[in-house]
Image (cartoon, rainbow over all chains, first blue to last red; front, side, top):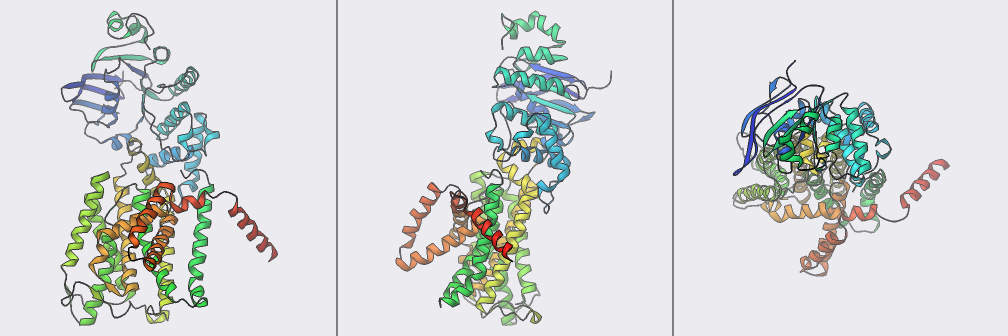
Length: 252
Length: 346
């Protein structure tokens, strides 16, 4: 097997006395959808922040696409092909839906210093932005201020922005958080489609979604990896049941 | 929020109307025999250059710079120093001064930009209150520095005339109307440059960084350097305003760099509508006229000005321009149709 796209060794981060992430080893193979689950406070979002560079790791090594990235700031990691969405939607609410994606496209192109031609006249970038919006079903809302979109649509918008850079790895932090059943079902379909083209690290509470989508599941408990394995193995593991899933299967 | 395309279109119309007023003003002043109007309008135009430049960093960058008067002062002192050396046949570091527009004006702008680069590089490491205080601190340092300067005993300098344009232009800036139009050209040119800037990728990234810096970083752009560039361009604009101000008033003194001047510039931007470029021009006009006319009514005019500003901030969150853009009815459309009819006649 070839080297994993993303590889973490003994990664840790503490906040005061609390070891939020405590010596995590994790390998995400290219072309897979790798789910990261765990009870509240397990350190899942912290781990995502350590991977994308929003937080600095106290210890450990992170390799991405064959090179160490632990010393790089977040924006430099993004330029290497790491894209993410946030548990709490993070968009540019006052800008139009199209401009949100357009800014992401321009950022990915590296042409952020152009000072003369209006951004919206860059037809190649606009076409790409509209194509990305069409992919997530938001083309008809392109001119609306992004802040006026429904919650589920904002999450889809975030995915379009993350895809603008044609990333090598998508970090999706609870894309279904706060969604109703219908929006969740839409998002599952979106992810099913995305996983055919992208490597994804998915943090998610919705167990049905995780077991339906994931190729590999890592269970994080108290900042440590409890187990990594195929969805069926994780589902039936007694240790995982006790630590996380509780008595019933649908803890979510 | 500036959504859709209606507001920017109205904004363009407002800008054109302002330009028309600006162009017609000297003629109107002659008509009503109020030559002082041109002097007043010059003051508005000159301060508007500074307000527009401040809007780049305040409105578009989202950073409250409380030391913008420093850059205005630097531009003014460049002019003053050039005059002083030239007039007294003195030299400073081997420079014997100049009153040449083509030399001294770009010099003032350049020095202001360089100082902005230094101040910005340090200040932009902070945010929020920290940024407000550190920009204020730098401006105060420069204020006390120029206050300690002595032009033959005095801390201020009255100029004996204005900068000189090359002969081939046939223009004499000592003519009030000529100077007004030159200042107006500077305002229009600078505002136009800024309007290109804010709609170009550079400006859009700057604005996106104001809305959500974390998201911008996750998209691969640390906006720090964009902010610094905006700060430097804003500083250059402040310098341009200062160069004009020294000539308009034929006076250079430390008062130009005082902290309340920086405050007034912020008021102009907020009052007119920040993040719009056109708004700060309206704000400059409104504030200068308020000061002018309130001062005629009462010497305690600042007591009246305060509540007026308070009301404006409370009830016109998006400034005067926001009110204009929110006007009911399609008066812009009516104007457009009227124009179309006229051009149809021709």
